[in-house]
Image (tube, rainbow, N blue to C red; front, side, top):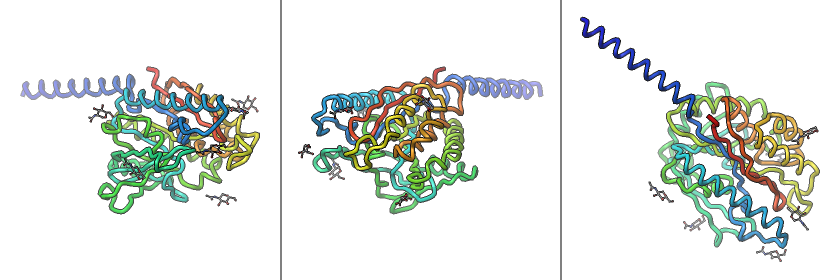
Length: 320
Ligand SMILES: *[C@@H]1O[C@H](CO)[C@@H](O)[C@H](O)[C@H]1NC(C)=O
Ligand SMILES: *[C@@H]1O[C@H](CO)[C@@H](O)[C@H](O)[C@H]1NC(C)=O
Ligand SMILES: *[C@@H]1O[C@H](CO)[C@@H](O)[C@H](O)[C@H]1NC(C)=O
Ligand SMILES: *[C@@H]1O[C@H](CO)[C@@H](O)[C@H](O)[C@H]1NC(C)=O
Ligand SMILES: *[C@@H]1O[C@H](CO)[C@@H](O)[C@H](O)[C@H]1NC(C)=O
Ligand SMILES: *[C@@H]1O[C@H](CO)[C@@H](O)[C@H](O)[C@H]1NC(C)=O
């Protein structure tokens, strides 16, 4: 009898210590161990093919490339179990955010002035389709517009890899620990092309829910947002020139170096329809992911537009 009581006490003491150490670990480390903004422009991938006579632009391209490589090494050193990758123009649904649900992903990218082949930069990744399906179910319960997509076979069981292209391949190419890390890929819906400002409240809600779900998982998670900035820096570029481009990129940079909401949610939001940035919705979602918890140390590594589109590299590390 007494033995039972003692055992019960012991069990509750052990349970209490378990709960306490769990709380302590959560406070000290958290499950989202870092977040990063990486560009997906071909110039960032390999500036050696960047065909320009403008030495300033070439130098800026190398600065972006070197910063992305540095972030890649930083991600490796965080030893993530899961890379959560947000892509603005992957395989996209009109309405729903999508998680890719094949067990593997594969694809290639090239650079702005040298197409594949011969300039092929290929990436193969393991997709955590079970975790991705769990996230879909959780977020659907919160009435978010989200679904999952498997290519050429059932979720988690398709033999072929899910097709990846430049917005996924280029950020992933900078991360060499893909053999020990699986990924969850979230593809933004194509309504973002014309309705990204209207999506802001939804993106903030999505980011908040994602943060809670990722924190609740037992994995060490690194969040990567694949994003380029304004596409209207140059009259010669495919989208022409807009006076909104430069202040848009500056506002995004200000946000990335401070996590202050105003430059992103006020300044950049008022400019994005003119600036034309594929990265905007991912940045707003990331803002909500990061502002759901207490303290992050934001660092803007670089923010340039060596050609018609802007690119920045930024890191956000828990400061505790
Ligand atoms: C590089 O730029 C020059 C001048 O604009 C052009 O003549 C040449 O075809 C370009 N080369 C490539 C590989 O794009
Ligand atoms: C990389 O991908 C390209 C295009 O998808 C393909 O032609 C090439 O064989 C691949 N290279 C390697 C090394 O797998
Ligand atoms: C993963 O790849 C890196 C280099 O790309 C290598 O150094 C490391 O040993 C590999 N790890 C495993 C577990 O295969
Ligand atoms: C966005 O609007 C433009 C101009 O109205 C239209 O041509 C284009 O098809 C729209 N794109 C999407 C994805 O809805
Ligand atoms: C945001 O816009 C305000 C008002 O136009 C301006 O004063 C401020 O400098 C802008 N901030 C950034 C970071 O661009
Ligand atoms: C060279 O590139 C820089 C950086 O993109 C740009 O500010 C500058 O105007 C360019 N110079 C010329 C002559 O095009």
